[in-house]
Image (cartoon, rainbow, N blue to C red):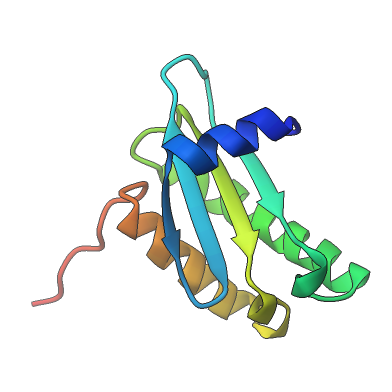
Length: 113
């Protein structure tokens, strides 16, 4: 996603869930053929090299987990919280997956007996 209007539409009409390190927003759009992603890393997220690292990590998360989405015809925006630059990749991944499940993007894990 590169247009401000797309980000605004996801914010105004989509769903969002906030976690400790990320805010995940999504909007289902049947007109899309595949997922469209956007990442927001403001200066509050850290210095330039921290923001670049966060965007690389977010792209990796989408690349690894988007094929498992229940429905891929959607916009997905990942917003880094200020504490995200202090988190490890495993912590970011756990928080991102938790928010994705809360939004109904991923199936819930099978319950252990």
